[in-house]
Length: 253
Image 1 (cartoon, one colour):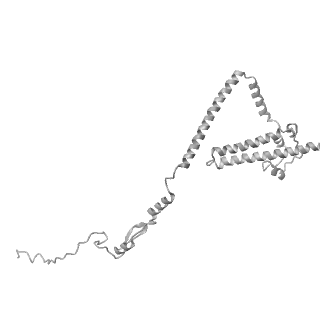
Image 2 (cartoon, rainbow, N blue to C red; image 1 turned 90 degrees about the vertical axis):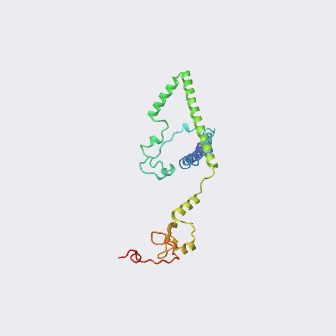
Image 3 (cartoon, helix red, strand yellow; image 1 turned 30 degrees about the vertical axis):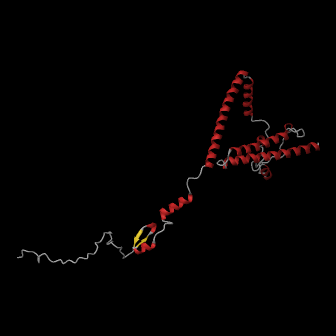
């Protein structure tokens, strides 16, 4: 009796380890699908799927081993039922089950499907048993065509995905973010623009904000007069003597 109990404990421990590995692999795959779907490619997805398949194969080998006890012949019975919260149960189930009450035990320790589900399953089995060979063969052929069509669509989508990813990787960049920011700063704020301060100082014009030319107060440039910027007449070297019109009129009164 003690030997069987030790063998059962060892088998259960190995099964628990394999189940935990399988659970971790499934959780990692779900995390990648939810958070890394933009960078996840088809080979990485197949690697994760192969890891899950390997854990399932190992678990099946443990269950089908000759020294492993037949768990189908064993019954799990609750030893203590309480509506209060059990911290050990919470820790063991990783927060999924907090109480082991009377209304929850039938669902947690159920070894057969729900009666309604079991009844539907029995009806489907009877319907499949009464189906003729020709009808079953036709349905299998139709399902095979549908599955093959879906498989072709998935393969085409995978090829397009891989080709787009490869083209996106090999494509050279057509813009430079640094040059764009420098251009915007130069146009908007005049950053990086050089101004000839000596020439501007002699002409009485100084650069203002944004590269605008602003004249100095009280200064006038050569050839410019007045606020409207009209061109002034150049000084003439010819002397003129302007007299009143009454003095040179030939017909005086």
